[in-house]
Image (tube, rainbow, N blue to C red):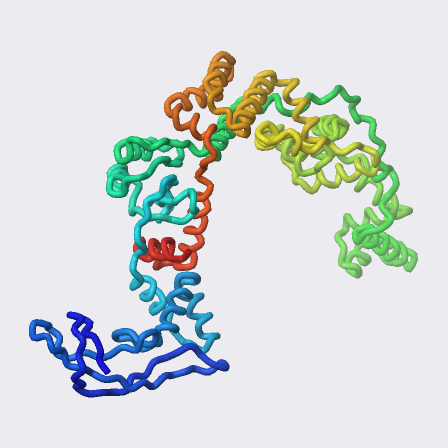
Length: 493
C-alpha cells in the first residue's frame, strides 16, 4: 500500500508509524456516532520536499485536520449556508450533532468561492449593508436568475473594474441610476442598457401622486344643499324632574327625614345637628312641599357650553357626518372649550332622533385616487370606478393625467417602446407640470428606457435577490459582515 504526499505528490510506501483518529459522523437512531480509524503515517522520499512525514487520508471519509467525516462536514456546510449560525446550531442539535453557531459561520467562511461566470445578460442593483449609510452592489445573471457576485460598494470605479475584468456582457438591466449608467458605459461600452420597467412605473406613479396632491382640495364631492337640523326634539331634554340617580334619591331621603322630624316638634337647628346638614340646606328642604320642586330646577333650563355650536353640528349631521370624534375636532377648531364626551352624548341623542340618517360617503384620499389611476381599469371595484369617474369629471388635469398613464401602460404591456417619443411629445404639450418633468427625465436616458419598454428583460430577479439578502442579514444579525454575506449569497444556491 502507498499514499501520496500532500505537498509534492510523490507516492511513498515507507510507513513511519500509525495512530487512531476519532471522527464524528452523522447520528444514527438519534445517537451520536464516533468512528475510530487507525491511519498510517508515511515518510516522503523526495529530498527537496519540506514535509518529512505525512498521514494517509481515506477517500470520502477523512480530510486533513478534520475531526468530522467528510459526509458530516459537507452536511454541516449546507446547513450553515441555509440557516446560518443560531438556527443551524439548534437544528443540528436536534439531529444529535452538537455544533456551535460560531463553528457554522467558520465553515461558511472556509468554503472556496465559486468559479466566476460571465453572464450574457447582467442585472445590477444596489442593496443596503446599513440602510441610509453603507450600500453595496449585487450582480445577477438574468437568464439563470443566479447571483454572480457582490461588490463592497456602489461606486463607478468598482463596477467599471468588475465589468472590465469580465468581458462578454451583452445586455445590462439596471435602474435609472446615473452612476451605474456611467460605470456600464465605461466598463462594457458595447452592452445594451435596459431600464427596468418596475422602476419606470414606480417613477410614473410618484409623478401621479404629486399631481393628485396638488389638486387634493377638489377630490371630495361638493356637499349638496341640505336643510338644517335645528328643530330637533330630544326626549331627554324636558321639564320633568329626574326620577333616578344617587343625587335625586338622596334629596328625596333628606326631604322625608326633615319633614318627619318637623312633625315630631324638632327645630331647624336641631334637625341640622341631628342629620349633619347645613342650616340653609335644612331650610330649603323644609320649605319644599315636594322633593320634585328641588330637582326640577337643577337639571332643566340650564345652558350648555355646546349650545353655540349646536347649529353647526346640526348642519354637519344633515350632510351625513355622524361621527362624534370628527365633529368634536371640527368644533374644537372653532373655539369649543368643552370635552369630547359632551359631544358624544349629544350626537348619540341625534342618532336616536334620526335613526334613518344615511352614512356619509367616504372621502377619496390622495392615495386612493393615485391607486385608481395607476391600476388596471378591469381590476377596479364598481364603487371605486364610479368615484374615479366623478373625480376625473371634476378635475380636468387629473383626467388628462389618467389618459397619459393608460397610454404609457399600453406601451409597456405591448412592448411598443418605439412609440415612446410620441408619448413624450403629447405629455410636453399638456399642462401637467409634474408629468412633463417625468417625461423630460426619460429623455436623459432615452435609449435605456426604449430598450426596457421593448425587450423582455427586466430586473425582477435582482429585486428577488435583494429581498433574499434582507432575510440573510436578519438571520446573521450583528455578524453579517460583507465577506460572510457574500459567501452565503453566492453559495446558497
